[in-house]
Length: 302
Image (cartoon, rainbow, N blue to C red; front, side, top):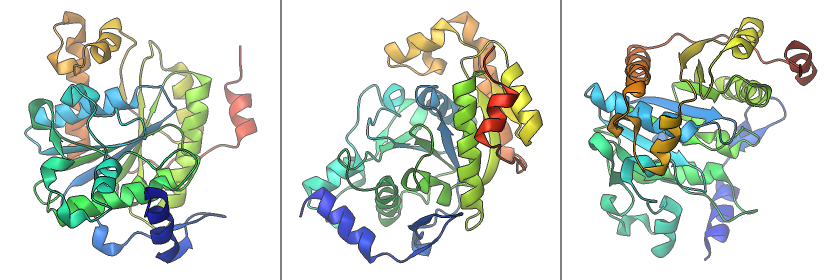
């Protein structure tokens, strides 16, 4: 049986339930609930720096003495690249080698230790144009639970690809305590943020996830994000500038905490402050998404 056939067979056998207006998604198996760890799902427009943000946030948590697991949820499987210094194999790739008999796998087959002890997993994705990202996330969590790898974890970070345009890639929200958006101070990423606010609101009807707020990334100013926040009830959790040293970190296969760049000191302090605040617990952000036309009217193009 191919990976695609396996995905479709399992999807067809799982009961579905309403998940937001006009949406029908796979129901989360109660046995697959992540317990004991604080879980954050990071979303945002493609290319906005989610993986860089997620990886450095993971390191910041580890610097606070927390046991951290980062799960990349993108077929590109490069979420943990700067942590492990390589592209690690995906859960789907590894499962396919054993014909999806997960009992044949060992933790070291799919979990890799990254910088400062951050544990790294790349969920991967089904072949292009087939299958569902939600199944991939579900199988990853199932595998982690079967091997008792979540029992010794304090923080789980899901790094999810791009804008939320389908329920499959919104699946990490079923596990998360807080959904966090990464956005730049520009129209396109704010437009994507609005869609993500809608998605988290839909998931919140049936699951415990709530909106945590927005991390403003790659931006000198925050005025556009501030206007959106004022109109919707979103709040800014952290602000990271557009520094060349941050861009170079990716090229050097390095987290910011490993870079020898004096200009990064306030950035590292901001990451540590953000990790501390998230660990302590940020209040639910009571944000309400806007209609597309209203965003154009609010921000538009000057």
